[in-house]
Image (cartoon, rainbow, N blue to C red; front, side, top):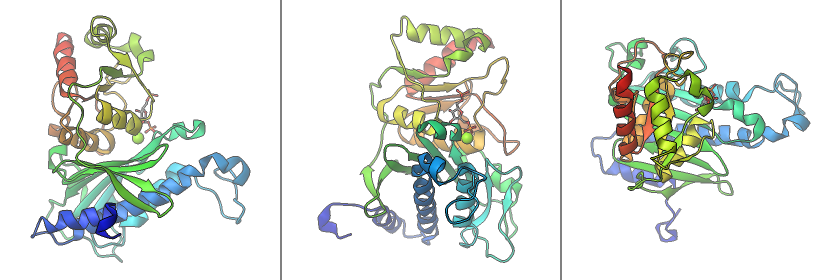
Amino acid sequence: MSADTHVVTISRFLVEEERRHPEATGAFTDLLHEIALAAKVIGREVNKAGLVDILGAAGDENVHGETVQKLDVFANNVMYRALDHTGLVACMASEENEGFIPIPDKFPAGDYVVIYDPLDGSSNIDVNVSIGTIFSIHHKISDGERGTLEDCLQPGSKQVAAGYVLYGSSTMLVYTSGTGVHGFTLDPSIGEFLLSHPRMEIPVPPRKVYSINEAYFRRWSRGQQELVRYMKTEGEFGSRYIGSFVADIHRTLLQGGIFMYPSDSVNRDGKLRLMYEAAPMAMVVEQAGGRASDGRRDILDIQPESLHQRVPLFMGSTEFVDLAEEMLAVDD
Ligand code: AHM
Ligand code: MG
């Protein structure tokens, strides 16, 4: 794409970012290219999801005689296969896999650790609601040539980069590598992500919106109940809850507000996963000027103990996350 069109493709953006870091090897740029490619492949299938009834449902054979995979299984495979052979990655972990994912011996290993939720909110597919992919990138810290579990279990503050892909009314890729948050929208006619949201920042003052599954009200702690009661009465907040994490966080980034998935009497640690959902989105939200907390401490400071650990989550405009922490203190 030439400069005079004023269109910045993700490729051009990444190359220009790389030039600003003379020590860069190009490996990070290559890695993000692979993730962007995976996003396009997943997005293409997500857009066809409404056609399963006529083209064949998961488990059926499609018109080509191939078995149709469930979309989350498909997305998981696409992410893995986009990265396994590149020589850029030391190991991976996916919300869809029990253990950490080594790089097969037949491929060279690299220095990056990639952790992902390949298709979050997949229960929303059947009703045509936006879903997303979330990714988190660390440097390998172990000494060996190939990555280990220790490389995956690093606190969010050590992330090199993080981001998400939203399969919504358009497909967007949003990421940060620690110098602001940048959003790209897929132009399907040319198959390229184009820079549409440079330097995203949560607006100040923010829109007063809380986002929580309020049906769990009776299970909440006293502090949590008082917080939501305050927001809807004296606080004069509005309410929005899509029930699809990537979409709820994307709205919060663009408009402000607070997303909450607290602990409750049934789910003591909430529902969302620290490594696949909370930590990467916390890096994005903090880079956009917001905050992310488990109600007591910053999400990015939490040292993970296991790959699939869950964490209560309060994320969005700084002033509302601060307010949540203050009001939840009555529970201590
Ligand atoms: P999933 O990993 O099974 O897709 O669940 C994650 C989703 C998130 O996208 C969303 O924020 C949350 O579950 C909604 O949960 P609930 O239906 O309990 O409100
Ligand atoms: Mg998920």
